[in-house]
Length: 30
Image (tube, rainbow, N blue to C red; front, side, top):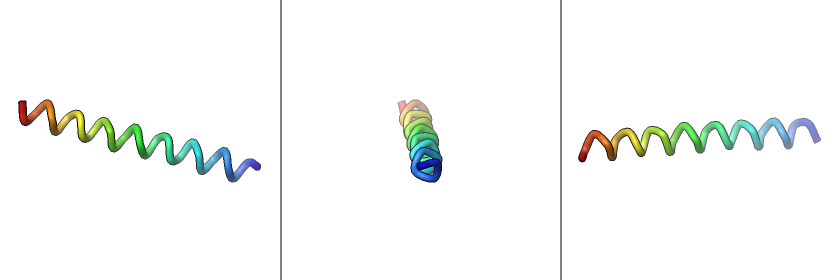
């Protein structure tokens, strides 16, 4: 149970990090 929650949090952080990078690159292009 704990490992599942942990991995879920890790995936959420990774996704948020990737989205932030994409947004930053888009802003730089504009």
